[in-house]
Image 1 (cartoon, helix red, strand yellow):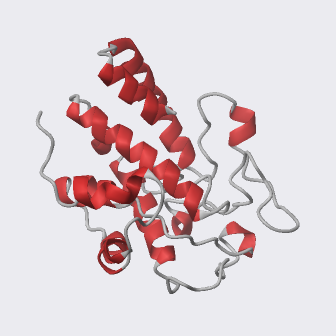
Image 2 (tube, rainbow, N blue to C red):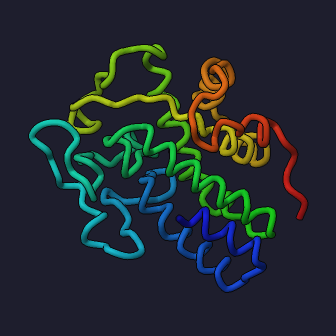
Length: 219
């Protein structure tokens, strides 16, 4: 919704709407990805609206991933889970849609002169590396859910659908800001860029075409 809002704001030259969407992004992204590297403590950050609904880490479903509105049973938040997402324990497909939207808004804002990438670089870097590493931990056609250690998703396993949305973030964080991203780079080179076309029915089919090593946007 925020990605669409900022797109509408730019298209209609609505500065008030643009600033609203950017401000919302600045509070929503820290609630969506938890990051020790970004300075978070051992609790999820509160979301900008219903704080009580979205920031709980105490839900432990008896079977499956059934805790909608929480971190889906993710109760360990420390260096081992740096970059974990509110939807990691739901499935990596939904996580990837959230990641794509956050990246696209940041890229649009940068073209407008607002650098959100730099502001949240440690969090977005941790998120990309954390999820890319787990995707690459299993063969592409491995049975799902994949095994997970006890500290992740309460040991219930990971739904590791490929998440073909790392290209925009890799270009911004690695090519422009200079961060080392070995897991993301491995995923892009060995998996995503070799997928059949289309890899999905969603917009991130074309991330490599639009952002695969592109230079920085104009100031």
